[in-house]
Image (cartoon, rainbow, N blue to C red; front, side, top):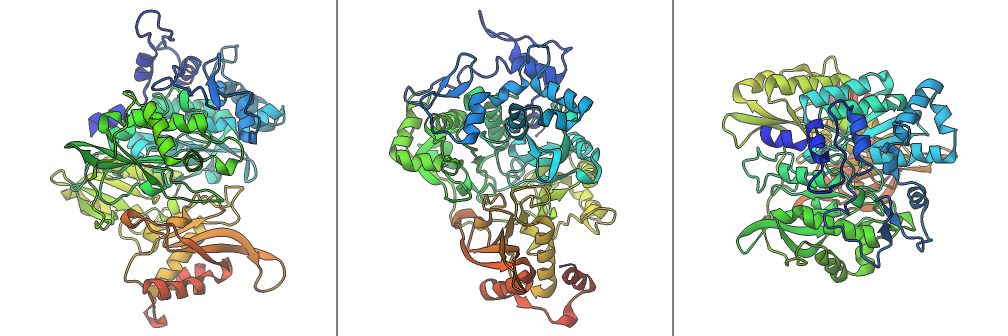
Length: 624
Protein backbone atom coordinates (compact mmCIF):
# COMPACT_ATOMS: atom_id res chain seq x y z
CA UNK A 1 0.00 0.00 0.00
CA UNK A 2 2.87 2.37 0.70
CA UNK A 3 3.99 2.34 -2.91
CA UNK A 4 0.58 3.15 -4.32
CA UNK A 5 -0.18 5.86 -1.79
CA UNK A 6 3.12 7.57 -2.58
CA UNK A 7 2.27 7.59 -6.29
CA UNK A 8 -1.20 8.88 -5.58
CA UNK A 9 -0.39 12.46 -4.76
CA UNK A 10 1.09 15.36 -6.67
CA UNK A 11 4.32 16.41 -4.97
CA UNK A 12 6.73 19.21 -5.84
CA UNK A 13 9.39 16.79 -7.03
CA UNK A 14 6.94 15.11 -9.43
CA UNK A 15 5.72 18.40 -10.85
CA UNK A 16 9.27 19.60 -11.35
CA UNK A 17 10.04 16.36 -13.17
CA UNK A 18 6.93 16.70 -15.32
CA UNK A 19 7.83 20.29 -16.13
CA UNK A 20 11.27 19.55 -17.58
CA UNK A 21 11.61 19.57 -21.38
CA UNK A 22 11.04 16.20 -23.00
CA UNK A 23 12.94 15.77 -26.24
CA UNK A 24 14.39 18.18 -28.74
CA UNK A 25 12.72 21.54 -28.93
CA UNK A 26 10.14 20.65 -26.29
CA UNK A 27 8.45 23.70 -24.81
CA UNK A 28 8.39 23.46 -21.04
CA UNK A 29 9.14 25.48 -17.99
CA UNK A 30 11.94 24.11 -15.81
CA UNK A 31 10.72 24.64 -12.28
CA UNK A 32 13.35 25.81 -9.85
CA UNK A 33 13.42 24.30 -6.39
CA UNK A 34 13.23 27.77 -4.88
CA UNK A 35 9.76 28.42 -6.30
CA UNK A 36 6.84 28.19 -3.91
CA UNK A 37 4.30 25.46 -4.77
CA UNK A 38 1.70 28.07 -5.77
CA UNK A 39 4.23 29.89 -7.99
CA UNK A 40 5.25 26.54 -9.46
CA UNK A 41 1.64 25.74 -10.37
CA UNK A 42 1.23 29.20 -11.85
CA UNK A 43 4.40 28.80 -13.94
CA UNK A 44 3.27 25.44 -15.30
CA UNK A 45 -0.36 26.26 -16.07
CA UNK A 46 0.30 28.63 -18.99
CA UNK A 47 1.96 25.72 -20.80
CA UNK A 48 -0.48 23.45 -19.05
CA UNK A 49 -1.79 20.25 -20.49
CA UNK A 50 -2.83 21.88 -23.73
CA UNK A 51 -1.14 19.34 -25.97
CA UNK A 52 -4.71 18.42 -26.77
CA UNK A 53 -5.38 15.79 -24.14
CA UNK A 54 -4.60 12.13 -24.57
CA UNK A 55 -4.97 12.11 -28.34
CA UNK A 56 -5.27 15.78 -29.36
CA UNK A 57 -8.36 15.21 -31.43
CA UNK A 58 -11.12 17.79 -31.74
CA UNK A 59 -13.78 16.85 -34.26
CA UNK A 60 -14.09 19.28 -37.21
CA UNK A 61 -17.86 19.36 -36.54
CA UNK A 62 -17.37 20.00 -32.82
CA UNK A 63 -18.84 22.98 -31.02
CA UNK A 64 -15.38 23.83 -29.67
CA UNK A 65 -11.84 24.37 -30.93
CA UNK A 66 -8.31 24.96 -29.63
CA UNK A 67 -7.64 28.68 -29.49
CA UNK A 68 -4.24 30.29 -30.05
CA UNK A 69 -3.48 30.32 -26.31
CA UNK A 70 -4.00 26.59 -26.03
CA UNK A 71 -7.43 26.56 -24.41
CA UNK A 72 -10.59 24.78 -25.50
CA UNK A 73 -13.06 27.46 -26.60
CA UNK A 74 -16.63 27.45 -27.93
CA UNK A 75 -16.85 28.36 -31.62
CA UNK A 76 -18.21 31.84 -32.52
CA UNK A 77 -21.12 30.34 -34.44
CA UNK A 78 -22.44 28.73 -31.23
CA UNK A 79 -24.64 31.64 -30.16
CA UNK A 80 -27.24 29.93 -27.95
CA UNK A 81 -25.16 29.70 -24.80
CA UNK A 82 -26.21 29.58 -21.16
CA UNK A 83 -24.79 32.17 -18.76
CA UNK A 84 -22.06 29.87 -17.45
CA UNK A 85 -20.81 29.27 -20.97
CA UNK A 86 -20.70 33.03 -21.55
CA UNK A 87 -18.53 33.42 -18.45
CA UNK A 88 -16.12 30.74 -19.68
CA UNK A 89 -16.08 32.29 -23.14
CA UNK A 90 -15.18 35.71 -21.74
CA UNK A 91 -12.20 34.26 -19.84
CA UNK A 92 -11.06 30.69 -19.40
CA UNK A 93 -11.15 29.97 -15.63
CA UNK A 94 -7.71 28.35 -15.63
CA UNK A 95 -6.25 31.76 -16.51
CA UNK A 96 -6.79 32.80 -12.91
CA UNK A 97 -3.67 30.83 -11.99
CA UNK A 98 -1.59 32.01 -14.94
CA UNK A 99 0.87 34.87 -14.63
CA UNK A 100 -1.08 38.15 -14.83
CA UNK A 101 1.98 39.91 -16.27
CA UNK A 102 3.47 41.16 -13.01
CA UNK A 103 4.89 37.93 -11.63
CA UNK A 104 1.67 37.12 -9.78
CA UNK A 105 -1.43 35.18 -10.66
CA UNK A 106 -4.90 36.74 -10.60
CA UNK A 107 -5.74 34.58 -7.58
CA UNK A 108 -2.74 35.98 -5.72
CA UNK A 109 -3.74 39.52 -6.69
CA UNK A 110 -7.33 39.00 -5.50
CA UNK A 111 -6.13 37.48 -2.24
CA UNK A 112 -3.71 40.35 -1.60
CA UNK A 113 -6.35 43.00 -2.30
CA UNK A 114 -8.89 41.24 -0.07
CA UNK A 115 -6.32 41.10 2.73
CA UNK A 116 -5.39 44.78 2.39
CA UNK A 117 -8.77 46.33 1.63
CA UNK A 118 -11.36 43.73 2.56
CA UNK A 119 -13.24 41.14 0.52
CA UNK A 120 -15.86 43.60 -0.66
CA UNK A 121 -13.20 45.68 -2.42
CA UNK A 122 -12.58 42.73 -4.74
CA UNK A 123 -16.19 41.64 -5.06
CA UNK A 124 -17.53 45.11 -5.92
CA UNK A 125 -14.69 46.10 -8.24
CA UNK A 126 -16.29 44.82 -11.48
CA UNK A 127 -18.72 42.32 -12.96
CA UNK A 128 -15.75 40.27 -14.15
CA UNK A 129 -14.43 40.12 -10.60
CA UNK A 130 -17.81 38.85 -9.39
CA UNK A 131 -17.76 36.20 -12.12
CA UNK A 132 -14.26 35.23 -10.98
CA UNK A 133 -15.44 34.92 -7.38
CA UNK A 134 -18.75 33.14 -7.97
CA UNK A 135 -17.89 30.97 -10.99
CA UNK A 136 -14.29 30.79 -12.19
CA UNK A 137 -12.76 30.08 -8.77
CA UNK A 138 -14.75 26.84 -8.74
CA UNK A 139 -12.17 25.46 -11.20
CA UNK A 140 -9.81 25.57 -8.22
CA UNK A 141 -12.30 24.04 -5.78
CA UNK A 142 -13.41 27.36 -4.27
CA UNK A 143 -17.17 27.94 -3.96
CA UNK A 144 -18.25 31.36 -2.69
CA UNK A 145 -21.18 31.15 -0.25
CA UNK A 146 -22.67 34.49 -1.26
CA UNK A 147 -26.08 34.00 0.36
CA UNK A 148 -25.16 32.07 3.49
CA UNK A 149 -21.58 33.17 4.29
CA UNK A 150 -20.69 36.27 2.29
CA UNK A 151 -16.94 36.48 1.77
CA UNK A 152 -16.38 32.85 2.73
CA UNK A 153 -15.76 29.82 0.54
CA UNK A 154 -16.28 26.11 0.57
CA UNK A 155 -13.21 24.28 -0.69
CA UNK A 156 -13.52 20.91 -2.44
CA UNK A 157 -10.52 18.63 -2.98
CA UNK A 158 -9.42 15.89 -5.33
CA UNK A 159 -9.09 12.65 -3.35
CA UNK A 160 -8.96 9.68 -5.75
CA UNK A 161 -10.52 6.54 -4.26
CA UNK A 162 -11.28 8.53 -1.10
CA UNK A 163 -7.94 7.88 0.59
CA UNK A 164 -6.27 10.40 2.90
CA UNK A 165 -3.19 10.11 5.09
CA UNK A 166 -3.03 11.26 8.70
CA UNK A 167 -0.70 14.20 8.00
CA UNK A 168 -3.03 15.38 5.27
CA UNK A 169 -6.07 15.14 7.54
CA UNK A 170 -4.23 17.12 10.23
CA UNK A 171 -3.56 19.85 7.68
CA UNK A 172 -7.18 19.92 6.49
CA UNK A 173 -8.29 20.16 10.12
CA UNK A 174 -5.96 23.12 10.64
CA UNK A 175 -7.68 24.96 7.77
CA UNK A 176 -11.17 24.85 9.27
CA UNK A 177 -9.83 25.22 12.81
CA UNK A 178 -8.68 28.74 11.98
CA UNK A 179 -12.26 29.87 11.30
CA UNK A 180 -13.75 28.84 14.63
CA UNK A 181 -17.48 28.14 14.65
CA UNK A 182 -17.76 29.05 10.96
CA UNK A 183 -15.20 26.41 10.01
CA UNK A 184 -16.21 22.80 9.55
CA UNK A 185 -16.17 20.09 6.91
CA UNK A 186 -18.26 17.46 5.20
CA UNK A 187 -17.56 14.02 3.80
CA UNK A 188 -19.23 13.97 0.39
CA UNK A 189 -21.10 11.35 -1.61
CA UNK A 190 -18.02 11.07 -3.86
CA UNK A 191 -15.49 9.96 -1.21
CA UNK A 192 -14.23 13.50 -0.84
CA UNK A 193 -13.88 16.37 1.62
CA UNK A 194 -15.46 19.80 1.49
CA UNK A 195 -14.05 22.41 3.90
CA UNK A 196 -16.10 25.42 4.99
CA UNK A 197 -15.30 28.92 6.15
CA UNK A 198 -12.28 29.52 3.89
CA UNK A 199 -11.43 33.20 3.33
CA UNK A 200 -9.90 34.60 0.14
CA UNK A 201 -6.77 36.16 1.70
CA UNK A 202 -5.75 32.71 3.00
CA UNK A 203 -6.09 30.91 -0.34
CA UNK A 204 -2.47 31.17 -1.59
CA UNK A 205 -1.16 29.82 1.71
CA UNK A 206 -3.77 27.04 1.70
CA UNK A 207 -2.86 26.07 -1.87
CA UNK A 208 0.82 25.89 -0.85
CA UNK A 209 -0.06 23.75 2.16
CA UNK A 210 -2.20 21.39 0.11
CA UNK A 211 0.57 20.91 -2.40
CA UNK A 212 3.22 20.29 0.24
CA UNK A 213 1.20 17.45 1.77
CA UNK A 214 0.32 15.93 -1.60
CA UNK A 215 -3.20 17.26 -2.15
CA UNK A 216 -4.87 19.54 -4.68
CA UNK A 217 -8.24 21.16 -5.32
CA UNK A 218 -7.79 21.91 -9.02
CA UNK A 219 -10.65 21.12 -11.42
CA UNK A 220 -12.92 19.88 -8.65
CA UNK A 221 -15.94 22.07 -9.36
CA UNK A 222 -18.27 23.33 -12.10
CA UNK A 223 -17.82 21.89 -15.60
CA UNK A 224 -15.08 19.43 -14.69
CA UNK A 225 -14.68 15.77 -13.81
CA UNK A 226 -15.58 15.06 -10.20
CA UNK A 227 -13.61 12.88 -7.78
CA UNK A 228 -12.75 9.42 -9.13
CA UNK A 229 -14.62 6.95 -6.90
CA UNK A 230 -13.36 3.44 -6.16
CA UNK A 231 -13.92 0.67 -3.64
CA UNK A 232 -13.41 1.87 -0.05
CA UNK A 233 -12.00 -1.61 0.65
CA UNK A 234 -9.54 -1.59 -2.27
CA UNK A 235 -6.43 -3.63 -1.62
CA UNK A 236 -7.64 -5.01 1.73
CA UNK A 237 -10.88 -6.82 0.83
CA UNK A 238 -10.62 -10.63 0.91
CA UNK A 239 -13.36 -10.80 -1.75
CA UNK A 240 -12.28 -7.97 -4.04
CA UNK A 241 -12.20 -8.46 -7.81
CA UNK A 242 -9.70 -5.69 -8.53
CA UNK A 243 -7.76 -3.12 -6.52
CA UNK A 244 -9.24 0.17 -7.70
CA UNK A 245 -6.63 2.46 -6.08
CA UNK A 246 -4.01 2.48 -8.87
CA UNK A 247 -6.76 2.80 -11.50
CA UNK A 248 -8.37 5.79 -9.77
CA UNK A 249 -4.91 7.33 -9.40
CA UNK A 250 -4.24 6.98 -13.12
CA UNK A 251 -7.62 8.48 -13.95
CA UNK A 252 -6.98 11.37 -11.56
CA UNK A 253 -3.52 12.03 -13.00
CA UNK A 254 -5.07 12.27 -16.45
CA UNK A 255 -8.06 14.34 -15.31
CA UNK A 256 -5.95 17.05 -13.66
CA UNK A 257 -2.72 16.45 -15.65
CA UNK A 258 -0.85 15.56 -12.46
CA UNK A 259 -1.97 18.76 -10.81
CA UNK A 260 -1.22 21.12 -13.68
CA UNK A 261 -4.77 21.45 -14.94
CA UNK A 262 -5.85 19.49 -18.00
CA UNK A 263 -6.94 22.11 -20.53
CA UNK A 264 -8.25 19.44 -22.87
CA UNK A 265 -11.13 18.60 -20.52
CA UNK A 266 -11.39 21.78 -18.41
CA UNK A 267 -14.24 23.18 -20.50
CA UNK A 268 -16.91 20.50 -20.48
CA UNK A 269 -20.61 21.25 -21.09
CA UNK A 270 -21.41 20.16 -17.53
CA UNK A 271 -20.01 18.22 -14.58
CA UNK A 272 -19.06 14.57 -15.13
CA UNK A 273 -18.74 11.63 -12.71
CA UNK A 274 -16.59 8.49 -12.97
CA UNK A 275 -16.13 5.39 -10.82
CA UNK A 276 -14.29 2.05 -10.89
CA UNK A 277 -16.06 -0.98 -9.42
CA UNK A 278 -13.79 -3.16 -7.29
CA UNK A 279 -16.07 -5.76 -5.68
CA UNK A 280 -19.42 -7.46 -5.91
CA UNK A 281 -20.84 -4.95 -3.42
CA UNK A 282 -20.97 -2.06 -5.91
CA UNK A 283 -19.97 0.33 -3.12
CA UNK A 284 -19.20 2.85 -5.87
CA UNK A 285 -22.83 3.18 -7.09
CA UNK A 286 -21.95 2.69 -10.77
CA UNK A 287 -25.49 3.24 -12.03
CA UNK A 288 -25.45 6.93 -11.16
CA UNK A 289 -22.12 7.80 -12.83
CA UNK A 290 -21.47 9.26 -16.28
CA UNK A 291 -18.86 6.53 -16.76
CA UNK A 292 -18.56 3.36 -14.69
CA UNK A 293 -15.97 0.63 -15.16
CA UNK A 294 -17.34 -2.81 -14.24
CA UNK A 295 -14.93 -5.80 -14.03
CA UNK A 296 -15.22 -8.21 -16.96
CA UNK A 297 -13.13 -10.63 -19.02
CA UNK A 298 -12.81 -10.98 -22.76
CA UNK A 299 -10.97 -13.91 -24.32
CA UNK A 300 -9.45 -14.62 -20.92
CA UNK A 301 -8.07 -11.09 -20.43
CA UNK A 302 -9.15 -8.93 -17.49
CA UNK A 303 -10.71 -5.56 -18.19
CA UNK A 304 -13.89 -3.58 -17.81
CA UNK A 305 -17.34 -3.31 -19.35
CA UNK A 306 -18.57 0.26 -19.55
CA UNK A 307 -21.74 1.92 -18.32
CA UNK A 308 -22.43 5.49 -19.46
CA UNK A 309 -24.80 8.35 -18.81
CA UNK A 310 -26.04 8.00 -15.23
CA UNK A 311 -26.95 11.32 -13.64
CA UNK A 312 -29.14 13.32 -11.27
CA UNK A 313 -30.48 16.79 -11.98
CA UNK A 314 -33.28 19.10 -10.90
CA UNK A 315 -35.44 18.12 -13.87
CA UNK A 316 -34.45 14.56 -14.72
CA UNK A 317 -32.59 11.54 -13.31
CA UNK A 318 -31.46 8.48 -15.25
CA UNK A 319 -29.50 5.31 -14.60
CA UNK A 320 -26.37 4.57 -16.61
CA UNK A 321 -26.75 2.24 -19.57
CA UNK A 322 -24.32 -0.28 -21.15
CA UNK A 323 -22.16 1.11 -23.96
CA UNK A 324 -21.66 -2.45 -25.23
CA UNK A 325 -17.94 -1.92 -24.88
CA UNK A 326 -15.02 -3.60 -23.11
CA UNK A 327 -11.53 -2.26 -22.54
CA UNK A 328 -8.42 -3.91 -21.09
CA UNK A 329 -7.05 -2.30 -17.95
CA UNK A 330 -4.33 -0.67 -20.05
CA UNK A 331 -6.97 1.35 -21.94
CA UNK A 332 -8.87 2.71 -18.92
CA UNK A 333 -7.48 6.23 -19.36
CA UNK A 334 -7.71 6.14 -23.15
CA UNK A 335 -11.42 5.32 -23.17
CA UNK A 336 -12.08 7.90 -20.45
CA UNK A 337 -10.46 10.51 -22.69
CA UNK A 338 -12.39 9.29 -25.72
CA UNK A 339 -15.74 9.54 -23.91
CA UNK A 340 -14.94 12.86 -22.27
CA UNK A 341 -13.78 14.54 -25.48
CA UNK A 342 -16.84 13.26 -27.34
CA UNK A 343 -18.96 14.88 -24.64
CA UNK A 344 -16.82 18.01 -24.75
CA UNK A 345 -17.11 18.34 -28.53
CA UNK A 346 -20.82 17.68 -29.00
CA UNK A 347 -22.57 18.19 -25.65
CA UNK A 348 -25.26 20.88 -25.36
CA UNK A 349 -24.17 24.27 -24.03
CA UNK A 350 -27.52 26.06 -24.05
CA UNK A 351 -30.20 25.04 -21.52
CA UNK A 352 -28.19 24.11 -18.42
CA UNK A 353 -30.49 21.26 -17.38
CA UNK A 354 -29.93 19.54 -20.73
CA UNK A 355 -26.15 19.67 -20.72
CA UNK A 356 -25.38 16.36 -18.95
CA UNK A 357 -23.90 13.58 -21.06
CA UNK A 358 -27.01 11.38 -21.14
CA UNK A 359 -28.83 14.13 -23.04
CA UNK A 360 -26.13 13.92 -25.70
CA UNK A 361 -26.45 10.12 -25.83
CA UNK A 362 -30.19 10.43 -26.39
CA UNK A 363 -29.80 13.17 -29.01
CA UNK A 364 -26.98 11.45 -30.87
CA UNK A 365 -28.18 7.89 -30.40
CA UNK A 366 -26.18 5.28 -28.48
CA UNK A 367 -24.72 3.70 -31.65
CA UNK A 368 -23.43 7.01 -33.00
CA UNK A 369 -22.11 8.00 -29.57
CA UNK A 370 -20.23 4.70 -29.42
CA UNK A 371 -18.85 5.28 -32.92
CA UNK A 372 -17.56 8.72 -31.94
CA UNK A 373 -15.86 7.22 -28.88
CA UNK A 374 -14.37 4.39 -30.92
CA UNK A 375 -12.70 6.64 -33.48
CA UNK A 376 -10.93 8.47 -30.66
CA UNK A 377 -9.36 5.30 -29.25
CA UNK A 378 -5.60 4.87 -29.88
CA UNK A 379 -6.15 2.07 -32.39
CA UNK A 380 -9.55 3.29 -33.60
CA UNK A 381 -11.25 0.20 -32.17
CA UNK A 382 -13.61 -0.42 -29.25
CA UNK A 383 -14.31 -4.08 -28.52
CA UNK A 384 -17.79 -5.29 -27.71
CA UNK A 385 -18.86 -6.08 -24.15
CA UNK A 386 -17.05 -8.91 -22.37
CA UNK A 387 -18.12 -11.51 -19.81
CA UNK A 388 -19.10 -9.72 -16.62
CA UNK A 389 -17.37 -10.79 -13.41
CA UNK A 390 -20.21 -9.45 -11.30
CA UNK A 391 -22.64 -11.79 -9.55
CA UNK A 392 -26.10 -10.23 -9.70
CA UNK A 393 -27.22 -12.39 -6.75
CA UNK A 394 -24.53 -11.07 -4.42
CA UNK A 395 -25.86 -9.24 -1.36
CA UNK A 396 -23.98 -6.11 -0.40
CA UNK A 397 -21.93 -6.38 2.80
CA UNK A 398 -22.13 -3.88 5.65
CA UNK A 399 -18.70 -2.31 6.14
CA UNK A 400 -19.50 -0.88 9.58
CA UNK A 401 -17.78 -2.57 12.50
CA UNK A 402 -14.64 -4.73 12.59
CA UNK A 403 -13.75 -6.96 9.62
CA UNK A 404 -10.80 -9.14 8.68
CA UNK A 405 -8.59 -7.95 5.84
CA UNK A 406 -6.94 -10.14 3.23
CA UNK A 407 -3.68 -9.38 5.06
CA UNK A 408 -3.28 -11.82 7.95
CA UNK A 409 -3.61 -10.29 11.39
CA UNK A 410 -5.06 -6.99 10.14
CA UNK A 411 -8.57 -5.56 10.24
CA UNK A 412 -10.52 -2.66 8.85
CA UNK A 413 -13.04 -0.78 10.97
CA UNK A 414 -16.07 0.92 9.44
CA UNK A 415 -17.01 4.08 11.35
CA UNK A 416 -20.26 6.01 11.06
CA UNK A 417 -20.10 9.80 10.71
CA UNK A 418 -23.67 11.02 11.27
CA UNK A 419 -24.77 12.88 8.12
CA UNK A 420 -21.11 13.29 7.11
CA UNK A 421 -20.51 16.45 9.17
CA UNK A 422 -17.00 16.80 10.64
CA UNK A 423 -15.06 19.49 12.50
CA UNK A 424 -11.43 20.26 13.27
CA UNK A 425 -11.38 18.44 16.62
CA UNK A 426 -12.70 15.12 15.33
CA UNK A 427 -10.57 15.40 12.16
CA UNK A 428 -7.41 15.72 14.28
CA UNK A 429 -8.63 12.81 16.41
CA UNK A 430 -9.28 10.55 13.42
CA UNK A 431 -5.76 11.29 12.18
CA UNK A 432 -4.37 10.41 15.62
CA UNK A 433 -6.32 7.14 15.73
CA UNK A 434 -5.05 6.21 12.26
CA UNK A 435 -1.46 6.74 13.43
CA UNK A 436 -1.78 5.10 16.83
CA UNK A 437 -3.77 2.04 15.81
CA UNK A 438 -3.32 1.67 12.04
CA UNK A 439 -1.00 2.67 9.23
CA UNK A 440 -1.82 6.38 9.17
CA UNK A 441 -4.44 5.91 6.45
CA UNK A 442 -8.12 6.92 6.51
CA UNK A 443 -10.69 6.07 3.84
CA UNK A 444 -13.97 7.74 2.92
CA UNK A 445 -17.15 6.13 1.60
CA UNK A 446 -19.90 7.49 -0.64
CA UNK A 447 -22.27 7.17 2.33
CA UNK A 448 -20.21 9.91 4.04
CA UNK A 449 -18.47 7.57 6.50
CA UNK A 450 -14.90 6.63 7.49
CA UNK A 451 -13.01 3.35 7.26
CA UNK A 452 -9.80 2.82 9.25
CA UNK A 453 -7.71 0.06 7.61
CA UNK A 454 -4.70 -1.97 8.77
CA UNK A 455 -5.62 -2.32 12.46
CA UNK A 456 -3.67 -5.22 14.08
CA UNK A 457 -5.72 -7.81 15.94
CA UNK A 458 -4.21 -6.85 19.29
CA UNK A 459 -5.16 -3.17 18.91
CA UNK A 460 -8.82 -3.53 17.95
CA UNK A 461 -10.29 -3.58 21.46
CA UNK A 462 -8.38 -0.49 22.56
CA UNK A 463 -9.43 1.37 19.42
CA UNK A 464 -13.11 0.63 20.03
CA UNK A 465 -12.86 2.08 23.55
CA UNK A 466 -11.63 5.46 22.30
CA UNK A 467 -14.12 8.21 23.26
CA UNK A 468 -14.76 9.37 19.69
CA UNK A 469 -15.82 5.84 18.69
CA UNK A 470 -17.78 5.00 21.84
CA UNK A 471 -19.31 7.64 24.11
CA UNK A 472 -18.48 10.68 21.98
CA UNK A 473 -17.46 12.47 25.18
CA UNK A 474 -15.59 15.66 24.36
CA UNK A 475 -16.73 15.68 20.73
CA UNK A 476 -19.71 17.09 18.87
CA UNK A 477 -20.95 13.57 18.11
CA UNK A 478 -19.90 9.96 18.59
CA UNK A 479 -18.61 8.19 15.47
CA UNK A 480 -19.91 4.72 16.25
CA UNK A 481 -18.72 1.47 14.72
CA UNK A 482 -22.10 -0.17 15.41
CA UNK A 483 -24.64 2.55 14.63
CA UNK A 484 -28.38 2.06 14.50
CA UNK A 485 -30.17 0.74 11.40
CA UNK A 486 -31.13 4.22 10.22
CA UNK A 487 -28.21 6.41 11.30
CA UNK A 488 -25.64 4.06 9.75
CA UNK A 489 -26.72 4.79 6.17
CA UNK A 490 -28.02 8.32 6.66
CA UNK A 491 -26.90 10.64 3.85
CA UNK A 492 -27.52 14.38 3.82
CA UNK A 493 -26.52 17.26 1.59
CA UNK A 494 -25.17 20.52 3.03
CA UNK A 495 -28.60 22.03 3.66
CA UNK A 496 -29.50 25.68 4.08
CA UNK A 497 -26.90 26.26 6.78
CA UNK A 498 -24.32 26.75 4.02
CA UNK A 499 -26.11 26.32 0.67
CA UNK A 500 -28.25 29.11 -0.76
CA UNK A 501 -30.19 26.72 -2.98
CA UNK A 502 -31.44 24.54 -0.14
CA UNK A 503 -35.00 25.08 1.08
CA UNK A 504 -34.44 23.38 4.45
CA UNK A 505 -31.84 22.33 7.01
CA UNK A 506 -30.85 18.73 6.29
CA UNK A 507 -27.98 17.37 8.37
CA UNK A 508 -29.12 18.09 11.93
CA UNK A 509 -32.75 17.45 11.02
CA UNK A 510 -31.96 14.16 9.27
CA UNK A 511 -29.87 12.93 12.21
CA UNK A 512 -32.52 13.97 14.73
CA UNK A 513 -35.30 12.18 12.85
CA UNK A 514 -33.24 9.00 12.44
CA UNK A 515 -32.40 8.94 16.15
CA UNK A 516 -36.02 9.57 17.16
CA UNK A 517 -37.20 6.76 14.89
CA UNK A 518 -34.59 4.36 16.26
CA UNK A 519 -35.67 5.31 19.79
CA UNK A 520 -39.36 4.58 19.15
CA UNK A 521 -39.20 1.58 16.80
CA UNK A 522 -37.71 -1.88 16.39
CA UNK A 523 -36.27 -2.84 12.98
CA UNK A 524 -35.68 -6.14 11.26
CA UNK A 525 -33.51 -4.56 8.55
CA UNK A 526 -31.47 -1.46 7.77
CA UNK A 527 -33.29 1.38 6.04
CA UNK A 528 -31.36 3.91 3.95
CA UNK A 529 -32.62 7.47 4.36
CA UNK A 530 -31.25 10.32 2.22
CA UNK A 531 -31.90 14.05 2.65
CA UNK A 532 -31.41 16.74 0.05
CA UNK A 533 -32.33 20.39 0.36
CA UNK A 534 -33.37 21.15 -3.23
CA UNK A 535 -34.19 19.50 -6.57
CA UNK A 536 -30.49 19.37 -7.54
CA UNK A 537 -30.51 16.26 -5.30
CA UNK A 538 -26.90 16.33 -4.10
CA UNK A 539 -28.14 14.00 -1.36
CA UNK A 540 -29.25 11.47 -4.00
CA UNK A 541 -32.75 10.92 -2.63
CA UNK A 542 -33.73 8.87 -5.69
CA UNK A 543 -31.50 5.91 -4.67
CA UNK A 544 -32.66 5.83 -1.03
CA UNK A 545 -35.17 3.49 0.54
CA UNK A 546 -36.81 6.71 1.76
CA UNK A 547 -35.76 10.04 0.32
CA UNK A 548 -36.53 13.49 1.73
CA UNK A 549 -36.30 16.38 -0.76
CA UNK A 550 -36.64 19.84 0.76
CA UNK A 551 -39.43 22.18 -0.30
CA UNK A 552 -41.88 24.72 1.02
CA UNK A 553 -45.37 23.37 1.59
CA UNK A 554 -48.73 24.55 2.93
CA UNK A 555 -48.82 25.29 6.63
CA UNK A 556 -51.09 22.64 8.21
CA UNK A 557 -51.84 24.94 11.14
CA UNK A 558 -52.67 28.16 9.36
CA UNK A 559 -51.76 30.49 6.54
CA UNK A 560 -48.58 30.58 4.50
CA UNK A 561 -45.95 27.93 3.92
CA UNK A 562 -43.55 25.98 6.12
CA UNK A 563 -40.51 23.77 5.66
CA UNK A 564 -41.45 20.46 4.13
CA UNK A 565 -40.12 17.52 2.14
CA UNK A 566 -41.17 15.60 -0.92
CA UNK A 567 -41.04 11.91 -0.06
CA UNK A 568 -39.35 9.43 -2.42
CA UNK A 569 -39.80 5.70 -2.05
CA UNK A 570 -38.40 2.61 -3.73
CA UNK A 571 -34.84 3.57 -4.60
CA UNK A 572 -32.14 0.91 -4.48
CA UNK A 573 -28.41 0.43 -5.00
CA UNK A 574 -26.21 -2.51 -5.88
CA UNK A 575 -27.26 -5.16 -8.38
CA UNK A 576 -30.91 -4.23 -7.96
CA UNK A 577 -30.26 -0.52 -8.56
CA UNK A 578 -33.42 1.45 -9.16
CA UNK A 579 -34.52 5.06 -8.90
CA UNK A 580 -37.32 5.79 -6.48
CA UNK A 581 -40.50 7.76 -7.14
CA UNK A 582 -42.09 10.72 -5.40
CA UNK A 583 -45.12 9.69 -3.37
CA UNK A 584 -46.15 12.82 -1.48
CA UNK A 585 -45.28 16.00 0.40
CA UNK A 586 -45.13 16.35 4.18
CA UNK A 587 -44.43 19.33 6.48
CA UNK A 588 -41.25 18.71 8.47
CA UNK A 589 -43.22 19.18 11.69
CA UNK A 590 -45.24 16.05 10.86
CA UNK A 591 -42.37 13.84 9.73
CA UNK A 592 -42.01 11.69 12.84
CA UNK A 593 -45.51 10.11 12.82
CA UNK A 594 -45.56 10.04 9.01
CA UNK A 595 -42.24 8.19 8.75
CA UNK A 596 -43.20 5.83 11.60
CA UNK A 597 -46.26 4.77 9.62
CA UNK A 598 -44.21 4.41 6.43
CA UNK A 599 -41.60 2.25 8.16
CA UNK A 600 -44.30 -0.01 9.58
CA UNK A 601 -46.16 -0.32 6.30
CA UNK A 602 -43.21 -0.75 3.89
CA UNK A 603 -40.24 -1.98 5.94
CA UNK A 604 -41.69 -4.21 8.66
CA UNK A 605 -40.71 -1.98 11.59
CA UNK A 606 -42.69 -2.09 14.82
CA UNK A 607 -43.43 0.55 17.44
CA UNK A 608 -41.83 0.13 20.86
CA UNK A 609 -43.91 0.40 24.00
CA UNK A 610 -43.23 3.49 26.07
CA UNK A 611 -41.82 1.46 28.97
CA UNK A 612 -39.21 -0.17 26.75
CA UNK A 613 -37.73 3.12 25.60
CA UNK A 614 -34.37 4.04 27.11
CA UNK A 615 -33.66 7.39 28.74
CA UNK A 616 -31.38 8.24 25.84
CA UNK A 617 -34.17 7.28 23.46
CA UNK A 618 -36.65 9.56 25.19
CA UNK A 619 -34.10 12.38 24.92
CA UNK A 620 -33.86 11.71 21.17
CA UNK A 621 -37.62 12.08 20.79
CA UNK A 622 -37.54 15.29 22.83
CA UNK A 623 -34.76 16.70 20.64
CA UNK A 624 -36.83 16.03 17.54
